[in-house]
Length: 513
Image (tube, rainbow, N blue to C red; front, side):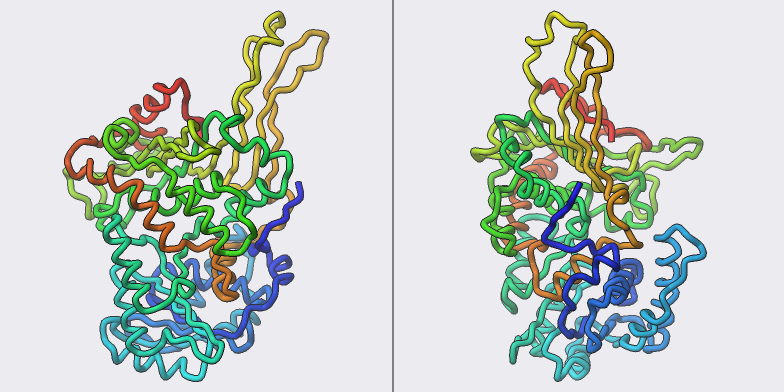
């Protein structure tokens, strides 16, 4: 299967090198001493350097509250990079490309300072003075986003002059409800233009996610049937085997709904359901995605109770290993009602999708790690086979596999060999690893490159963010009123029984992930 996409495959340096080099830039990382920088941002920038996509004038400035000098910062990141190369390749003999790392290390500097102190930004201004292009990456807790934007603005560091750009990258969560999302957007837009804001969602850096648009809009066999006349329903699953680990304090105030649905899952849904944009221009694509989210029926009234299932994992097993329940995790309330699982039935009120349910689910401590989208096509008429040994037809399903493996599977019926008409289910598989070399990638390579070159296609716009929160806000309000209970499920299972029952009411069932 051939692939033509708007973005190069940035997991392979050989493919990466076919892209154009990004312009010279100062890349400022707030929260540079944290896990995100060490595990994901620096390895992604290293891969971009391997591919020759970073200009010789590229510089990285780490900013954090922790006291550290340039040498200690370089050493800290060097150890992390060595671990990244051996771990991602699954090869203990794999080695860091020393020339590339030396090149990056020479361009690393560190600034210690309090994010709330204007003096920190005065010193930062001196470091980036004379540089037209600057990216400010907020690898921090969400509570610092508006603080950083305000401080950068007060220091004059967001002004775009003489053709240079100033961009700010914001990690999710983009608020914790509709009101806070609106407030965050308002505070960011008060000091810079929408074109300067890059709201990043690392799920959109995955090749299969990007390939959804290419699959639909570049193949004449798919787009004509991609509508309610031919599709029965769509399932979106994001399942994790891990628990909350050491993030109990964060998760207690967040839960599965806030953590995953208005951002990751709605972005996946919008790429499956969007109309064809007029071009691959960033605003054209983002406008079509926003229209889809705005057309989803809000989970208000009866739907907030009837079409939503919350769950929380209890103690369970993975093979011979026992694992504790959510309420026994560190920093979790022993009587917590925070959900670690959410399943929902959604409807899209537009001409293409009216009457087609979208079932979504996500949770922790489930049986298997899996992120996939399954498009279930309507059954062919059975009348032709009524006088044959065939008693049922194989469902026609397209599987879009996102993780842990990336690819596409199409399931359909075929005649079994022999003189009689007997049908069997068969699958046609496309795996990225079989067709394209996959290097040790973080999933951030595409997104960071796009930010450097000014392509905002894969980044969320303010209206998209607020539309997502507006869908789930009625359900959040119903929870606060005590109208939606949290159902227990054993760790290592598929989730609470009530989730399966929600689909059974519609004479459907979840596919095992």
